[in-house]
Image (cartoon, rainbow, N blue to C red; front, side):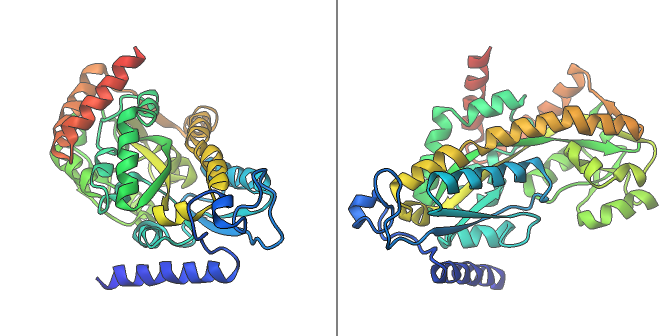
Amino acid sequence: MMKRLTALLAGLALMFTLTACGGSPASSGGSPASSGGNQGGTSQGTPTPTEKPIEIKLTTTDPSNAPTVTQLENCAKEIREKTNGMIDIQVYADGQMLVYAEGVEAMMSNANLFLVATPSYLVDYMPVMSTLVSPYLFSSREVAAAFFESDYFKGIEAECEAAGFHVICNDGLIGYRSVCANAPVNSVADVQKLALRISSGDVMVRLFTDLGCNYTVMSFSDVFNGLQTGAIDGLECVPLTITANSLYDAMSPMYYSRTSHILDCYGIYAGQEFWMSIPEEYRTIIQDVLGNWGKLATADCVAQEETEIYPEYEAHNVTVVDLSDEAMQEFRTVGEVIIRDQVRGDEVLAAVAEVEAGLK
């Protein structure tokens, strides 16, 4: 309770701070004309003399040198230019402020905030969002991208607005999580032999419990030492984790077995009341530009894997292991049971299957 109160106060403090520097929400979600012309300027986006820029903090846990952050900064610059400086989005990377639960609370308090997060962080307000990061839900990035463009997901977006937040985009498909360890994984039986560090979260814990793995949830700051000392045999992670943290210096041999158990997807969210307070013409620009961030970030992450990460694996003797179709089906069978146990799991599975069939 104390943590939620602290987060709420942080969100309120942010709103007051932004109000003091000209970032307060508009009084109406309509067009500039409907609010007397003092919030949105003219229909051509030219500010009136009495206008003040709307300052918005955009927060993310991604490191400042990540391609995802580069694209966020590019989008912020484009929005600033297209609105003649009236929408000033300031990107805060490296988890500097208001991320995780604190960020969600601030966003739901309608602070001047855009939050980059995985959908599961919003489970308290929209339970089905956690289902979207279930294991083996999406067989490929292409299927996931099409799903987030589908009518089914548009329905979820409408439900999110009713729940109090706006989905600017939800298709930042950062990478598949797989098993990095001191031995290759070619089957479920191989995973059961390993002591792995896994990410926290109910779905991840459920997956590795059902796989029969000896796992531990530890702070990532302890992973390097854990690998060095043999306290753990490995971890599950996206490809970038190994190179960004030079984990190959902590363990040898090292195998990156592409179990591809969960697709890390990220979105950009805003409190619905704050979103609607932004003049309509500016909302349109933000949605058009920042709404495309997921696609741009995904393309950059794919390119980075192919041109930088996997070549670096080779240079540091990290062996990439691709599982057989039979082995992958063994993992997917475990994942399907978990999906069906999630909120609206059967419904989401059917929607994904329909999208996938349409791509063939």
